Image 1 (cartoon, rainbow, N blue to C red):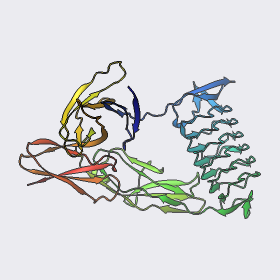
Image 2: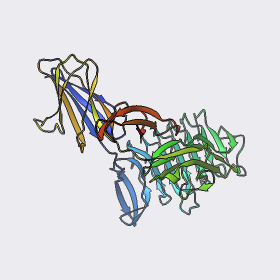
Image 3: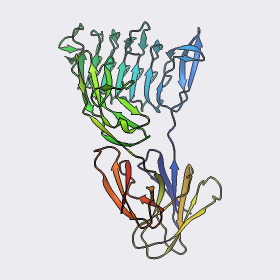
Image 4: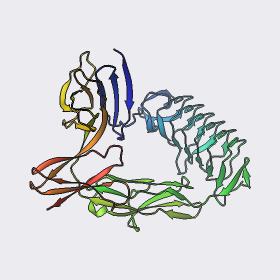
Length: 462
């Protein structure tokens, strides 16, 4: 029996669908609910004179921080090519305790998007970044080299074609030849200190501009062939989003800013004047939203070298009462002409003869229809198949629906409204008005799939 394979994507970060179809009488879909796992950092290392050198990596990647200690001993070095070709890393912080980053240590890390090395505080530890340490990291978009770094090796960030901005701390005195060569997207190099020594640092970077702190020395109209200009005020290029949240849920605000040095500051405010404790990053989260937290949230971004700050446009937060909901799988059946289709499911296909269970027997009608899987609790994965005797192959589609329990007196009506989580907080849309035939009955929003996240309110009508 010849089989072909198809893969389908779903607009939900926790779910994916894959399926296979038989050429004769059966179509199967897999519903896989997979919660994202936190990155686990696992290292190979060597110990010399009581200090640790990381020599390799065996973890799952993601965002991570190089540890300052392993087995109670200080981590001081990252060996040559220790992370080379580690395509799973996305974001990386290397603390001041690391004194040496070896040659090619992170070269060819194709998914690495941002790197921060050292910190903004004065440091007695001098970090050396080796030759070609981050070369060919094609996804690398931003680099922050904080105080504590003394030198940057030859071609350390060469051929990082997505690199758009780099911030270089005041402790850097020497930059190797071609450190940022062939970084075709590089538009801004922010220097916190005096002009360092370097030759052909920005070779073949047609967009690059060097920004320097007013009052520092060694700067002319050009630095190593690229134009220079004093640092300007920060710019908030992506303001935080207005949104609606349910009581007890999580609400997050995020912004993006440019012209912000390592020594710059971020501060979130509530209703204009109330500085929020601990809210000093580009991302700010309310873990347990309460009605008193409804209002306007703004972000103030400060660049001390430009002697000024900017404030974002306010993002409004509306807080509403929670409505009980559940997400259920919705299996789409094709249009038909009265034939009977048997819909079945299995929770595993690992066995030689998988165990299938009946979900529903459906008579096909003229238009498309959905069959909802209301099993509780749902397993981590589920397969579906449909078949009919002496009939053509039955093609299935897969989507999701939101189940909302409605309550009230029999004979009364309930209006179901929805609002998008992100967007205007008064933009409620009436989804349906339901006449209750029982004191409790479910309602299904079958239009929510592949739409922005929705919240709901229920309005009792006479």
